[in-house]
Length: 211
Image (cartoon, rainbow, N blue to C red; front, top):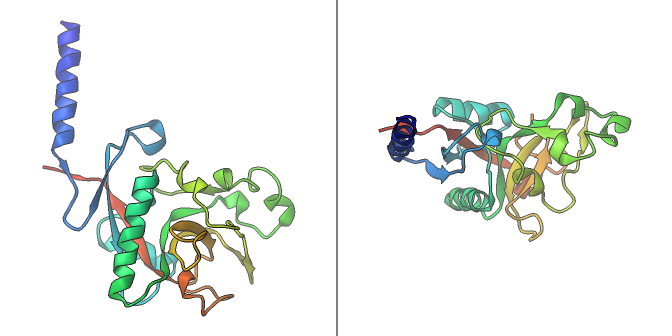
């Protein structure tokens, strides 16, 4: 009897999962549910690129207005799908390079300009120096996908590069990889003309609808 109940429960789960569907305009990322991604089997992601470049506050607002949250990728396939969506959006703007915000930022302990803290554990390791707000994505792969020489941790006034962007670059070792950036700027104040670092929008994620 107990085996029958367990079997029925599994069938119900499979049937339920088949009825999950992402809204129109969202990519469907099928995932293996684990503790690291909040047991998420399907995650819906949309790249939103407004008319003008944005800072982190505006990027999060874009997602919120669309009923989603700032998100990121979990594996190589998702990274490339996000990169392709960004390339398509940039092409509509008649651009070949540019970037967008992803979920991810330095932990409060590592958001500092104190070099003694930054050079010591956990802040000297990108895998432990950064975290995400949304818990539907396992960030292990993302935090191994840095562009060449990144994370840089550049200082500007009282701020350190804390947020994360995915960039399309003219430089092969930086193309379709992540980079740490200043959260409160749409364009790098230290490299204003470097349009490959401009934040043109955001990757937004949400749970699917149950059909």
